[in-house]
Length: 182
Image (cartoon, rainbow, N blue to C red; front, side):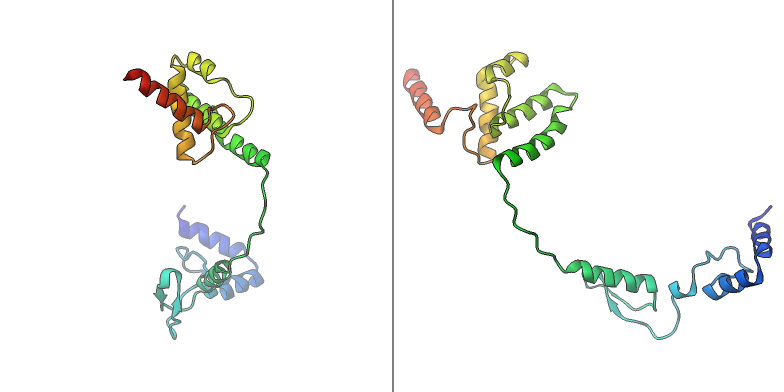
């Protein structure tokens, strides 16, 4: 059975009122390839409507109710609503970051999970392992873990966390090491 036969059977089952309603909306009983797009949504060859669309694109290919509605929607969306100023406590920020970093902690790769823990150490999130314990767990030195955490701290422009030495203490240790090497 072809699509034409199926379409004709469908059309014959409709009442006269249903057929008239469909025809007035743009359905063609003799053309099954017609998608049944109502006339109000089709282009017509009358006077072209010239409208400015996204990125100053000008369209002048007839009236299309969908396009007009979309243009009105875009115009409404372009008006920005002011966001209220909201103050976050440090605990609220850490909770948000903890949820984001939880995705990193779910990784199957140990290096990725290590990096997530180093981020938490740099942020000063509570209940983290010590750098020594973390180094032993990943077969690294404590200095390697400390260097990772320090790099993250610098990249995020954060003050030293409670797990880290202060910048003054780091400078003092660095100077002592330089003197020892000389």
